[in-house]
Image (cartoon, rainbow, N blue to C red; front, side):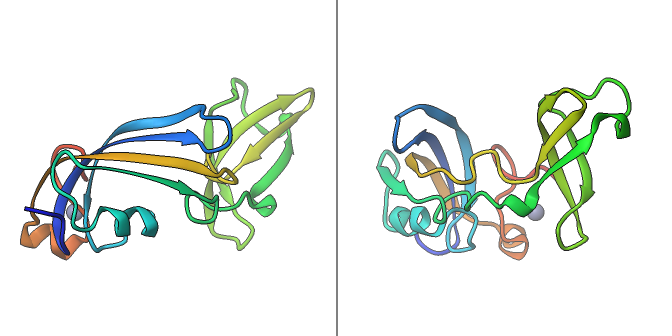
Amino acid sequence: MTIIQDTAVTLAYKITDAATGKPLDAGTTAYLHGHDNLFPRVEAALGGKAVGDTVTLDLTATEAFGEHDEALVRTIPKSEFPPGIKVGGQLQGPGPQGHPVLYRVVKIKGPEVHLDANHPLAGRAVRFAATVKSMRPATAEELAHGHVHGAHGHQH
Ligand code: ZN
């Protein structure tokens, strides 16, 4: 069996900084092939692969987590926050288009809190390496939802 449209695939993946080799993220994930669950170049490379196969791709920021968007960065006076605000905390607030977005607290400097709603890995060229751990045909329910259920997939 190899990966084709509508295959439910489990991958072990590792993301490193393309320039420095620094590890950024690693884990196991399940995705539905052909449903835009992954970065398009990664999904294209996985087509036709079998269990045990590995793909390694160097992705630009645009091909991976997106460019860093300055419109998603905000600085708010600390006095506007409840006590106990911490770096690494998350809060919802209005985005540049007025829709709510999730901000991370990236820095607290004196009286200012720096917030960023970009993906933590936005703006980085990354190396994405993945090994195919298992695969099976997707269920009708998974195809209707456009994602994989169960272990390493959506839990709902
Ligand atoms: Zn679902």
